[in-house]
Length: 148
Image (cartoon, rainbow, N blue to C red; front, top):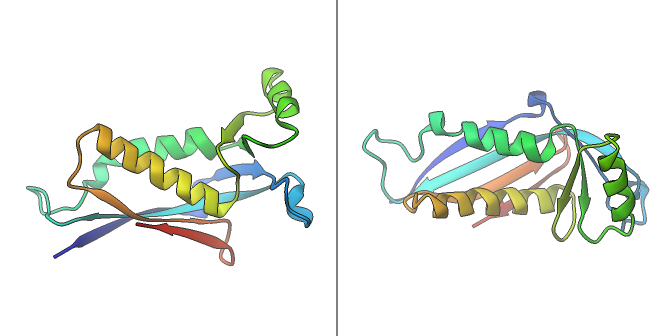
């Protein structure tokens, strides 16, 4: 039997990020932003001694990680041709820069979040718990999902 629990940080939480998809042929190539939302599903084959998949009280580190990565940040890809200029703006205090490997956007954000949380579980030897799914949404119409 497999058990799942979920944690959602809705758009109202204020994970306001600016980003651009420099390869896009559309208006998405320009800097634009959203108050991102994140939905995470945890799974385990066995419940803990409290009967839980993962103690929601232990999720504060996840919220802090999301704030540190996205909240009031300018998020760009590590291969953005304007990366040096973004670093310059960060160094003079114009932006708070987050550089992500391989690209930006809901799909990339979901993948990055999934990997970071799972890596932390693995490092903490919390091997009973796995990340099953991460969904990142810009608003009610646009979202992307990464699943195990």
